[in-house]
Length: 247
Ligand code: PEP
Image (cartoon, rainbow, N blue to C red; front, side, top):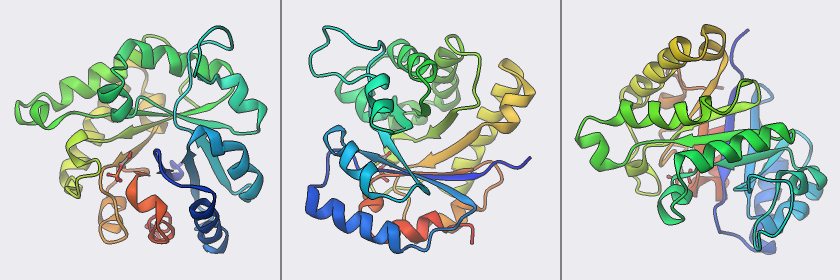
Protein backbone atom coordinates (compact mmCIF):
# COMPACT_ATOMS: atom_id res chain seq x y z
CA UNK A 1 0.00 0.00 0.00
CA UNK A 2 1.21 3.51 -0.78
CA UNK A 3 2.27 5.88 1.94
CA UNK A 4 -0.42 8.47 2.68
CA UNK A 5 0.88 12.03 2.32
CA UNK A 6 0.95 13.72 5.73
CA UNK A 7 1.34 17.44 6.34
CA UNK A 8 1.93 18.83 9.80
CA UNK A 9 1.79 22.44 10.92
CA UNK A 10 4.03 23.41 13.80
CA UNK A 11 2.71 26.62 15.32
CA UNK A 12 5.59 26.71 17.83
CA UNK A 13 5.02 29.33 20.59
CA UNK A 14 2.76 31.47 18.42
CA UNK A 15 -0.87 32.49 18.40
CA UNK A 16 -3.51 33.77 20.75
CA UNK A 17 -7.22 32.93 20.67
CA UNK A 18 -7.88 35.53 17.97
CA UNK A 19 -5.15 34.33 15.64
CA UNK A 20 -5.99 30.69 16.35
CA UNK A 21 -9.61 31.35 15.40
CA UNK A 22 -8.38 32.71 12.05
CA UNK A 23 -6.27 29.58 11.49
CA UNK A 24 -9.21 27.33 12.39
CA UNK A 25 -11.28 29.30 9.92
CA UNK A 26 -8.96 28.71 6.95
CA UNK A 27 -8.54 25.05 7.90
CA UNK A 28 -12.34 24.64 7.98
CA UNK A 29 -12.79 26.45 4.70
CA UNK A 30 -9.97 24.54 2.97
CA UNK A 31 -10.76 22.64 0.94
CA UNK A 32 -8.15 20.16 2.17
CA UNK A 33 -7.16 17.26 -0.09
CA UNK A 34 -8.86 14.21 1.39
CA UNK A 35 -5.92 12.04 0.39
CA UNK A 36 -3.63 14.00 2.71
CA UNK A 37 -3.50 13.54 6.46
CA UNK A 38 -3.31 16.91 8.23
CA UNK A 39 -2.08 17.51 11.79
CA UNK A 40 -1.50 20.83 13.54
CA UNK A 41 0.99 21.18 16.41
CA UNK A 42 -0.51 23.52 18.98
CA UNK A 43 0.90 25.19 22.13
CA UNK A 44 -0.12 23.04 25.12
CA UNK A 45 -2.39 25.63 26.66
CA UNK A 46 -4.55 25.79 23.53
CA UNK A 47 -4.75 22.05 22.75
CA UNK A 48 -8.17 21.53 24.30
CA UNK A 49 -9.58 24.68 22.71
CA UNK A 50 -8.28 23.78 19.24
CA UNK A 51 -9.39 20.14 19.45
CA UNK A 52 -12.90 21.24 20.40
CA UNK A 53 -13.10 23.64 17.44
CA UNK A 54 -11.44 21.77 14.58
CA UNK A 55 -13.25 19.20 12.48
CA UNK A 56 -12.09 15.60 12.96
CA UNK A 57 -10.41 15.50 9.54
CA UNK A 58 -7.66 17.65 11.04
CA UNK A 59 -5.49 15.97 13.67
CA UNK A 60 -4.06 17.89 16.60
CA UNK A 61 -0.58 17.40 18.09
CA UNK A 62 1.13 18.55 21.25
CA UNK A 63 4.60 19.97 20.59
CA UNK A 64 6.28 18.05 23.40
CA UNK A 65 5.53 15.77 26.35
CA UNK A 66 7.40 14.04 29.14
CA UNK A 67 8.48 10.39 29.35
CA UNK A 68 6.32 9.17 32.26
CA UNK A 69 2.54 9.20 32.91
CA UNK A 70 2.46 11.46 35.98
CA UNK A 71 4.35 12.66 39.01
CA UNK A 72 6.55 15.42 40.40
CA UNK A 73 7.68 17.01 37.13
CA UNK A 74 6.56 20.61 37.47
CA UNK A 75 5.73 22.25 34.17
CA UNK A 76 5.58 19.04 32.14
CA UNK A 77 2.62 17.34 30.47
CA UNK A 78 2.21 13.60 29.92
CA UNK A 79 0.91 11.59 26.97
CA UNK A 80 -1.93 10.42 29.25
CA UNK A 81 -3.03 14.03 29.70
CA UNK A 82 -2.81 14.69 25.97
CA UNK A 83 -4.95 11.60 25.29
CA UNK A 84 -7.38 12.65 28.00
CA UNK A 85 -8.38 15.73 25.98
CA UNK A 86 -8.78 13.65 22.78
CA UNK A 87 -5.56 14.86 21.21
CA UNK A 88 -3.87 11.95 19.41
CA UNK A 89 -0.49 13.22 18.25
CA UNK A 90 2.73 14.62 19.66
CA UNK A 91 5.75 16.18 17.95
CA UNK A 92 8.99 15.06 19.64
CA UNK A 93 12.64 15.92 19.15
CA UNK A 94 12.12 19.17 17.27
CA UNK A 95 15.49 20.86 16.71
CA UNK A 96 14.39 23.73 18.96
CA UNK A 97 13.88 21.19 21.78
CA UNK A 98 17.26 19.64 21.00
CA UNK A 99 19.18 22.92 20.69
CA UNK A 100 17.51 25.38 23.07
CA UNK A 101 16.39 22.91 25.74
CA UNK A 102 19.33 20.50 25.29
CA UNK A 103 17.20 17.40 24.80
CA UNK A 104 19.46 14.43 24.06
CA UNK A 105 18.88 11.64 21.54
CA UNK A 106 18.28 9.34 24.48
CA UNK A 107 15.68 11.51 26.21
CA UNK A 108 13.83 12.00 22.92
CA UNK A 109 13.85 8.25 22.32
CA UNK A 110 12.45 7.65 25.82
CA UNK A 111 9.73 10.18 25.16
CA UNK A 112 8.89 8.56 21.81
CA UNK A 113 8.69 5.12 23.43
CA UNK A 114 6.44 6.30 26.25
CA UNK A 115 4.17 8.36 23.98
CA UNK A 116 3.64 5.31 21.73
CA UNK A 117 2.96 3.06 24.73
CA UNK A 118 0.35 5.58 25.90
CA UNK A 119 -1.37 5.38 22.51
CA UNK A 120 -0.24 8.62 20.87
CA UNK A 121 1.01 8.93 17.30
CA UNK A 122 4.41 10.57 17.07
CA UNK A 123 6.10 12.94 14.65
CA UNK A 124 9.77 12.35 15.49
CA UNK A 125 12.08 15.08 14.22
CA UNK A 126 15.67 14.59 13.13
CA UNK A 127 18.13 16.68 11.14
CA UNK A 128 21.66 18.01 10.90
CA UNK A 129 23.06 21.46 11.61
CA UNK A 130 24.84 23.52 8.95
CA UNK A 131 28.20 22.69 10.49
CA UNK A 132 27.39 18.97 10.38
CA UNK A 133 26.28 19.19 6.74
CA UNK A 134 29.39 21.12 5.76
CA UNK A 135 31.57 18.48 7.36
CA UNK A 136 29.70 15.74 5.45
CA UNK A 137 28.09 14.34 8.58
CA UNK A 138 24.44 14.57 7.52
CA UNK A 139 23.90 10.82 7.21
CA UNK A 140 25.88 10.01 10.34
CA UNK A 141 23.71 12.45 12.35
CA UNK A 142 20.30 11.39 11.03
CA UNK A 143 21.17 7.69 11.33
CA UNK A 144 22.37 8.23 14.92
CA UNK A 145 19.19 10.14 15.86
CA UNK A 146 17.02 7.44 14.28
CA UNK A 147 19.00 4.59 15.87
CA UNK A 148 18.45 6.09 19.33
CA UNK A 149 14.70 5.70 18.72
CA UNK A 150 15.08 2.27 17.09
CA UNK A 151 16.88 1.05 20.23
CA UNK A 152 13.76 1.83 22.30
CA UNK A 153 10.78 0.90 20.09
CA UNK A 154 9.67 -2.08 18.02
CA UNK A 155 6.45 -0.90 16.45
CA UNK A 156 6.85 1.98 13.98
CA UNK A 157 3.28 1.98 12.67
CA UNK A 158 2.35 5.12 14.62
CA UNK A 159 5.54 7.02 13.86
CA UNK A 160 6.14 9.65 11.20
CA UNK A 161 9.72 10.89 10.80
CA UNK A 162 10.26 14.56 10.06
CA UNK A 163 13.62 15.20 8.41
CA UNK A 164 14.32 18.84 9.14
CA UNK A 165 17.79 20.16 8.34
CA UNK A 166 18.38 22.69 11.12
CA UNK A 167 19.88 25.20 8.67
CA UNK A 168 16.58 25.27 6.78
CA UNK A 169 14.25 25.83 9.73
CA UNK A 170 12.85 29.34 9.91
CA UNK A 171 15.67 30.65 7.71
CA UNK A 172 13.96 30.85 4.32
CA UNK A 173 16.74 28.52 3.04
CA UNK A 174 14.92 25.44 1.80
CA UNK A 175 16.80 22.26 0.96
CA UNK A 176 16.60 21.68 -2.78
CA UNK A 177 14.25 18.85 -3.77
CA UNK A 178 17.37 16.84 -4.74
CA UNK A 179 19.08 17.47 -1.38
CA UNK A 180 15.98 16.49 0.58
CA UNK A 181 15.27 13.44 -1.61
CA UNK A 182 18.85 12.20 -1.19
CA UNK A 183 18.60 12.23 2.61
CA UNK A 184 15.10 10.71 2.61
CA UNK A 185 16.29 7.95 0.28
CA UNK A 186 19.33 7.05 2.36
CA UNK A 187 17.35 7.20 5.60
CA UNK A 188 14.75 4.83 4.17
CA UNK A 189 17.54 2.54 3.00
CA UNK A 190 19.12 2.64 6.46
CA UNK A 191 15.78 1.74 8.04
CA UNK A 192 15.28 -1.13 5.56
CA UNK A 193 18.69 -2.52 6.49
CA UNK A 194 18.74 -1.81 10.21
CA UNK A 195 15.10 -2.15 11.26
CA UNK A 196 13.25 -4.10 8.57
CA UNK A 197 12.35 -3.76 4.89
CA UNK A 198 8.66 -3.46 5.89
CA UNK A 199 9.33 -0.53 8.25
CA UNK A 200 11.69 1.14 5.77
CA UNK A 201 9.19 0.96 2.93
CA UNK A 202 6.12 1.95 4.95
CA UNK A 203 7.49 4.70 7.22
CA UNK A 204 6.39 8.16 6.21
CA UNK A 205 9.20 10.72 6.07
CA UNK A 206 8.21 14.38 6.06
CA UNK A 207 10.52 17.16 4.95
CA UNK A 208 10.62 20.31 7.08
CA UNK A 209 12.49 23.58 6.64
CA UNK A 210 11.06 26.74 5.08
CA UNK A 211 8.35 24.92 3.14
CA UNK A 212 6.01 27.39 1.42
CA UNK A 213 3.22 27.35 -1.12
CA UNK A 214 5.85 28.30 -3.71
CA UNK A 215 8.22 25.35 -3.17
CA UNK A 216 5.92 22.59 -1.88
CA UNK A 217 4.94 21.05 -5.22
CA UNK A 218 8.47 20.32 -6.37
CA UNK A 219 9.45 18.95 -2.95
CA UNK A 220 6.25 16.91 -2.72
CA UNK A 221 6.90 15.32 -6.11
CA UNK A 222 10.03 13.55 -4.82
CA UNK A 223 9.44 9.80 -4.43
CA UNK A 224 10.67 9.54 -0.83
CA UNK A 225 9.11 12.75 0.49
CA UNK A 226 5.82 11.72 2.09
CA UNK A 227 4.70 15.09 3.40
CA UNK A 228 5.92 18.17 5.24
CA UNK A 229 6.33 19.61 8.68
CA UNK A 230 5.67 23.31 8.27
CA UNK A 231 6.50 26.06 10.76
CA UNK A 232 5.99 29.70 9.74
CA UNK A 233 3.72 29.02 6.77
CA UNK A 234 1.37 26.89 8.90
CA UNK A 235 0.11 30.08 10.54
CA UNK A 236 -0.99 31.49 7.19
CA UNK A 237 -3.74 30.60 4.69
CA UNK A 238 -1.04 29.31 2.30
CA UNK A 239 -0.89 26.24 4.57
CA UNK A 240 -3.96 25.01 2.66
CA UNK A 241 -1.93 25.12 -0.58
CA UNK A 242 0.85 23.15 1.10
CA UNK A 243 -1.63 20.51 2.29
CA UNK A 244 -2.79 20.29 -1.32
CA UNK A 245 0.75 20.11 -2.77
CA UNK A 246 0.10 16.79 -4.50
CA UNK A 247 -3.13 17.88 -6.18
C1 PEP B 1 9.49 23.72 11.90
O1 PEP B 1 9.26 24.44 12.85
O2 PEP B 1 9.44 22.49 12.06
C2 PEP B 1 9.82 24.33 10.60
C3 PEP B 1 10.15 23.54 9.61
O3 PEP B 1 9.76 25.69 10.52
P1 PEP B 1 9.76 26.59 9.15
O4 PEP B 1 8.79 25.95 8.21
O5 PEP B 1 9.33 27.95 9.59
O6 PEP B 1 11.14 26.54 8.61
